[in-house]
Every structure is written in structure tokens, then in C-alpha cells.
Amino acid sequence: MGLGLAGRHDEARQLLNNLRDTLTLPTFRVWWDYLMAWLDRRPDDMKRHMATMATVKIQFDPEAIFLEGWMLCEVGALDDGLADLQHAVARRYFAASTLDRSRHFDPLRSNPVFRTVLADAHTGRDRALASFREAGGERLLGRHPMRAA
Image (cartoon, rainbow, N blue to C red; front, side, top):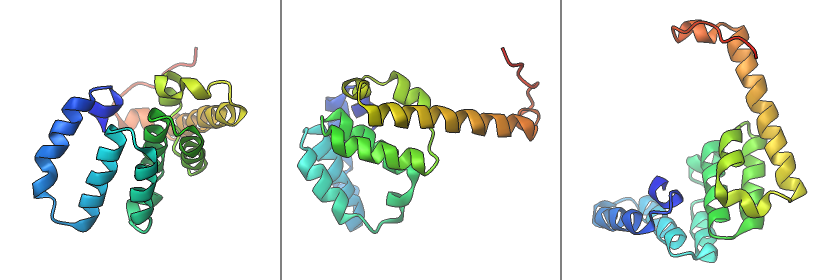
């Protein structure tokens, strides 16, 4: 996924093809099909494969939901991708920096729903960071508390 999101689709496809014969679990084969549909720019097939895996527990993980949304945006399925991003942020996955910086979200920048998702991600991240600092989290990491600018 990282290679594909970095635009290195041929390398990602080669690695996936090398894995294909080692996948014995049906869920992994569906995931492989999903990733190949993504690399081949087939959003309808991506959605079909994802629907097949609707009961797999990782589908309820906000990071997985965010990544699915990111991948859908990357192939141009902006409405479906935005819905996943909104769901992920609502489930407390606050990837504000990724939403800010990734070019895959450029077509959504003027969308009011995207702007709300981005604002919510920033707010959630800022609250989480404040709670972390208030609880002495930086000391747990062996760092001196950061000073507010």
C-alpha cells in the first residue's frame, strides 16, 4: 500500500504478484484482489471486494477505514473515499497531517464536507496531544515537555 500511495504502482504490483501463491486464507486472497483492483484503477471492483470482507474485524478499525478512503480517493472515487475518511475521523483516527499534505486529497480541498473532516481531524489531534502532555506522556517517552510556541 505504501508503494502504491507513493506512486510506485509497478513495484507494488510486483511484490503483490510474488505473494499471490503464498496466500492460503480466502480473506487474504480477497485482499490481494482488492489491492490489484486498486493498482489497476478499478474502483468498482475495489468496492465489490471490500463488501466481500465486510465482516472481517479489521474493517471496523478506523485506521483501516482511513486507508480504504485514501485509496478510493487516489483512484478518483472521491465520494466513497470521502465517506470513509469522515467515518475514520468520527471514530477518532486523526490523520490531520496526511489529510493536509497528500496530493490525493487535492480534488476535495474545496469540498465543505472535506473541510469539516480536516477541521475535525485537527481538533481531535490537538485534543489528544494536549491530553498526552497533561498526563506526562512526554516524560514517559524520556523527553522533556515541549513548550507551546
